[in-house]
Image (cartoon, rainbow, N blue to C red):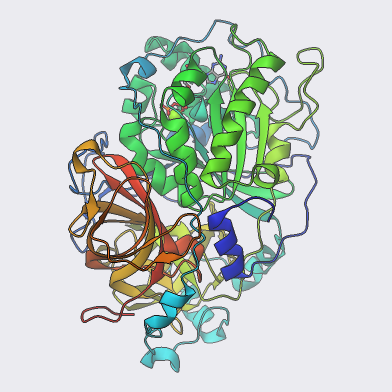
Length: 629
Ligand code: GTP
Ligand code: MG
């Protein structure tokens, strides 16, 4: 690798991933139907210290992350946009490949967009995360010193086949449960060899993430003209004329009234080459925990930057979420980044090449410092999310004569991800669950594949379950590969016995469940009043779908950032900027992997009082009483 890239280096070395063959097609195919799976599924509150979710009515109030020191972690929040009632009227006519939908909304709304009022509400966070140092520290020596217990042997192995092999009797049996398609009818699903990409939209508040998400759905015929007109009327009534496109993604009343996303909006669209799950993260810093849970499921990030004079500066130069989001996304495993310079239509920009270049020039060094390989993994492009320009089709030269690069759909379609191993041990962290003719769980497959009829285990509570139905996006399928975002109906477990962060896992090789682990931390900027990082430090741990309070039990050794070697000197505390190996403890069993085995399940962030104070990776499982591996 040409550039120093700590996480990537470890990832590639440890995972041994091979590269997918390049995909270059750019044309856009039919959008899928937006049939809902279960829009009536109840909402749930997440009490991380309780064993289960509690359904509640009415719908949740705004989720505001209260910055209490190591207080109760917030619940992850998602809403499925394709399942929203408003979108049911959307006509599902597939558009022709290459058909001209551009400018889809050009001229629809010629009024200048409203100036942001949310940005002014923000308390500007002037603290900016220091540059991330190279964490590729050779810890092999230390790892060898400590014995790592092997995964617990499973008595059930003989009885329960691991995922991947379907037993006929099981299929017949499960066909009676729920309303599943026949196995034959689902055989064709295997032929859908299109890449599946999970794309998270990140960036400062009001940069235009939801507007772009909405425009994508509109351009791919997931939303019809009538719905758009309705949103225009509603937005006008709320004095938020220019927000009508964002209403497609921002479905709850509070989001629409305030013009800012709270929950991560989730939606699907597809092109000839790729099936996309888009995750629209909130930009406001109060909702960073929600952003983290969205980004933890993504492979690709779209970092949205507002080109409007003053807005880019607020979001990037004077603090703001651009930096924290880009840093967090990298830590959470977002390996590819499209940096979308949005609002190019704004009167203060008018598709100016100088403005685009200025932004690119300022962002590149920062992204490099986050660990992105800027040449290989980052691509910049200008768009107007509001007017749909340079999104589905390239910019007409008459509007912008200097841009020769791709449009957004092309750029998304040509992202290449490392191949995941479909034969690896099955791992699917659960982000949510509900009851619907059985127990339905939601999540993204991080490793292995799943097939209807498989017997799996939910960890850490070791519940053996059977896969009754698999839904990919909103379609029932027979089989799903790593990287897919799924809903799976299970038998053998009650919905109240599952919490987010539990992991649906192979029976033969279940994910380790631990109370303690050793981790290498890069300390970012500590809080002013907690500037010493030492044993006893409490924070909120975010690792895949887990949000848990944790405590530092001890500092094992510090690492010299220059040599990347452990410093053999006893340490009692470290300060901002240090790289240190610590022992970390949680109160409830959580499922994690060593970073070198499963990077996606072994990297995490520590947050304290609403601020990310450290990023880390799991390096070892100590053998201590009370720990189950
Ligand atoms: P949060 O969810 O609060 O983080 O904001 P967001 O990034 O989702 O921004 P949103 O899509 O809600 O848009 C914020 C404002 O920017 C709205 O008034 C949009 O109309 C406006 N906006 C978004 N994209 C564009 C664009 O391409 N051009 C112009 N002129 N305005 C835009
Ligand atoms: Mg938004």
